[in-house]
Image (cartoon, rainbow, N blue to C red; front, side, top):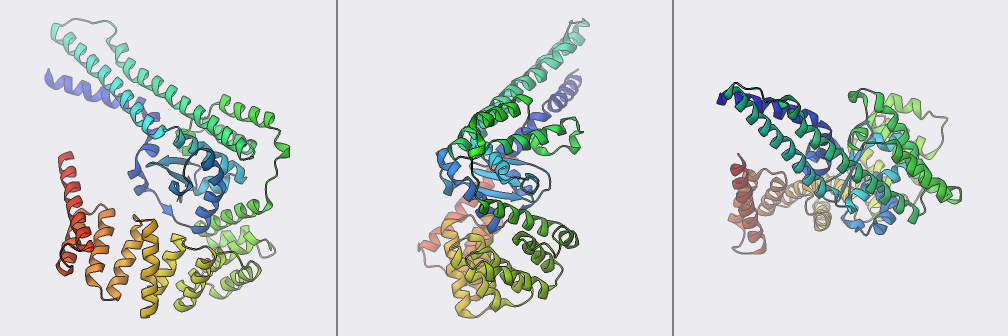
Length: 468
């Protein structure tokens, strides 16, 4: 009999999880920072800088510190955006390229900022626990009644109906919670967009297009539809607010439209076949974004001559643009012209000082070049990155190589320890930290930092063992 109860419990728990699949889809991405580790993330100084510039006024209206917000670009052609791990906004490349209007993209980000300002990450975690507890408690009660029924050879009426009460109640409660969250985020987005004089119609149009996918099979729907339920009243509400707002008087700078076309062209050129890019942006198209896309396509086709010709022309015509010399720096580096790439990355850094992505690329070129002066410059640049972004794993890894090139073995080992700690490889972090301590003066700042890494790594290992 005991074995049968276990079996009944197992079946009902599986059933309750199936009922709550929407709940899991909605919350998995916004409450679990570890989810980001499984994403195909891309880093691009231009895209991240442009998006942050567009939403900075909104962040200020939301009383959030723009310096605390981090945008992650997910290399995924489907439409989606979500928040995770505090104040991190994740945006799919598919959303950027398919938004058709950068104000629609800004509207989606305003919605996500509404989730952040509303504290929905913490609230959603609590709602998940309540929903799961409701389903599991009902399952246990149902299993107990079934056991009594079998033991006494009696028929307790309504047990089969009772089996569905817990999951359905949990589902209804969570649906209400998620709808309330979406309404709050919509209202916040509407308020923010109005306050910064941005149109609402592009957001409503985008949501309307995504909402048309409701009749499609779940596998063919964009994940945004599954994680942000789109109800007609939501779309109508935004359209109504747009009409009230008299958006014809809103003037959008032409420069923003060009910026949007550029980042779309950049994503297309880097994520699709070069041949397709050249078809989408043919030679007779002399727009900035078309020439930009062709330069990238030629880079990927290893046609260095054509690529440098396209990008060099753009650099001459746009002396104050940091991103064209950055791309030329990448072209030069990947074609073995290391010293020339340093010059371009330095120019890019002068135009956009201390951008971590540009500084990291510059440092990589300097280390690869190998001349002692440039390696020392790389060390200085990496220290700048880590001062502002102490969890930048790539910077710690490159700093380890840089210190080794300068024959600072103990500092190289300490940098490796920092990198492995951030990678959650605590055994290697301890190993490198211990090796570094052999060469450090006892209780010096570096020695104390190595001790900290050893201590906290051991603590993390203990926690993981306890969970197992």
